[in-house]
Length: 302
Image 1: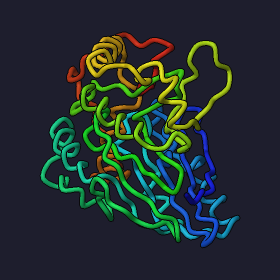
Image 2: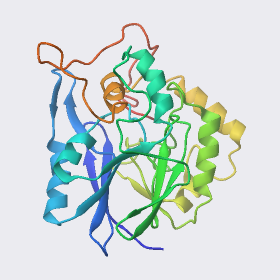
Image 3: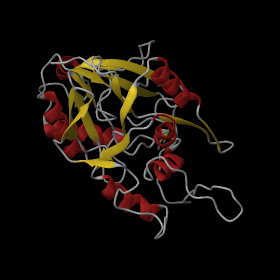
Image 4: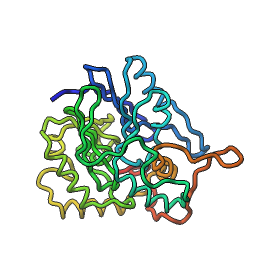
């Protein structure tokens, strides 16, 4: 199976890993889950993280075919529209984005100006849909559970799972966001676990579980099947659901969920400026129940 070249970009503020996935034969590439820097205390946005990706693409003279969002992230704002302006490429997400837009369009009272049909994106992937990055074959795999719209991407021998899985010593994604479901996540993970052991797995986050000092974001299907603390081989669906739901009940919301979701459901576009020329984000008061924030789950999706 062809091996794409993978370049990872870690954002320590959100513990997010973005990727450039390169076809060595054609020098075409995809960008996955890019981060827009956002300071919640001031409302300032910057493009420092995304500029690193721009510089890498230009330095290597790559052609961007795709900007892929694995799901509507709740822990960082997407820089995909800005990268598209700089580098081109089609901006894409899974077709179940419509479900997420319906849900959060209501939460944020987005109004009739907010389209809930996924039209903010250039392409909506169907489950099992194939596509190309240069000469590399790629396949979109619908892996709901964390959110309804989660999509994993198998590109050559490399699998990009978004928040569905974490490193084996950290486990799996939380399932308590609107539209999430632990039983559905278990079944999605079994689809991924059926891939060959040697399949490389690239993660969207690492949160440094106790006892590990270095950030990691690459593993394999074989390692996940043997060692994932939540869903290794032999764990039943019922046992997983019990474990996942008990853990989710202890987690606080990610610290950037409110700005992130209302931007990312718009494909990373900020809300339109109001009549004073200023763009605003909404904070719905007394809407979400949450546990007290701890050091472990501050800003996490796990």
